[in-house]
Length: 256
Image 1 (spheres, one colour):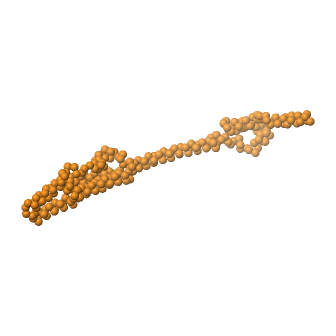
Image 2 (cartoon, rainbow, N blue to C red; image 1 turned 90 degrees about the vertical axis):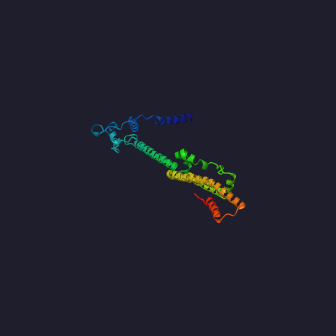
Image 3 (tube, one colour; image 1 turned 135 degrees about the horizontal axis):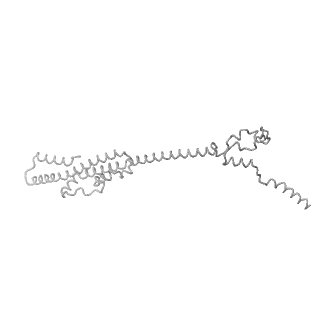
């Protein structure tokens, strides 16, 4: 029994060993090399037709594929699918680079326009940094004592008459307009024109306020003189009272 099993195993080994041998067929080797890297040359296809085309191996091999030797089927050949794929990939890569360049250009232009229009970057404007920032410095800073330079009587008169509150409201309104112009999305030209217009209004407001403080002394002098005359002498004539009333109206209701 053991001998029978051993003979069967040896027979199976003998049958399997030829299948495990490496096939060294020259035609298959040439075809593999040709498909991968070597030149596609129909004259190198084997088997050959032989004398008068009577080689039977030729007909057994190429009878069903007569156009095969003349068709370059290399994947990396001049017209192979891999060559076309690589060429298409290169073309798409160049197109992507062109689109990327165009996109970057549009992005740079958009950022430049946004920086010119956006109120968030208005402080970076060269004219603001070189001129308007210093011109509006008194308006942007914390208000100092606007009654400085006026005497005690002049201060009391400016406050009681409402002139000081009027000046403070006008100053605050101008400051709010300036801050709005700085933060609002505008073109650079419109923003600079608004700066220049408000700067002129600010200078005019300051000049009017200084004039009101100067005229306050005249009003106080007239009032003091009227009080003295009222106490020590005859009553003021209607014309004098009218002059005092006119002076009060000029100081109270004068505008920009």
